[in-house]
Length: 251
Image: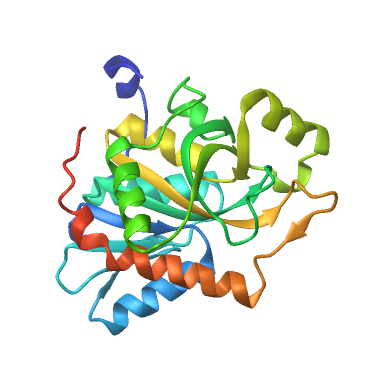
């Protein structure tokens, strides 16, 4: 969007007079269970709550990083992201779930999306780019963090949708075969688009919550094993955030 077009926009994200600036680096948890776990963990370690619409925001005791969420769906996730950016966020890691389209991506598998295919309705208002990519510096940080934790992962392209209950087998097969899509979610493409539009570093880590490549839908997000895996990944990312604060912005 050109400067001229931007001036025509009626509303812009703003920081309120009483709102404090937040650290530049943070983790954005899409789902309520993971967001609640992260907030509880950070508050127990001396973190401080901040306001974030009907979501949650907490800054750690040293004020070096923050955690935020939940925000399910592209519109709500973008609303929260815009606020985080105007409060000072410049490096953001999304933690979310995805449905796998490729055999070998099983429930609990870790996926690092390298590129999005926009299927939701929020991205077009920011950009005509339908295939935004994750930030290379943050992708490198995620790979290093997972390697040091002994965690295996896969990488691939992710399609984001606003209508998870309207996915046909033909549509998913076409996305996989023609667009090389390995998984689907609801937020990644919109957040990737907004990050590029606003000039911040953004990447994502996803856990496979559903297997859609089976003959029948196989959900796994409610199993104890998935919940343990979710907490393991969340704790590992939060534990490594100090090193992420050293990554330069605007790369």
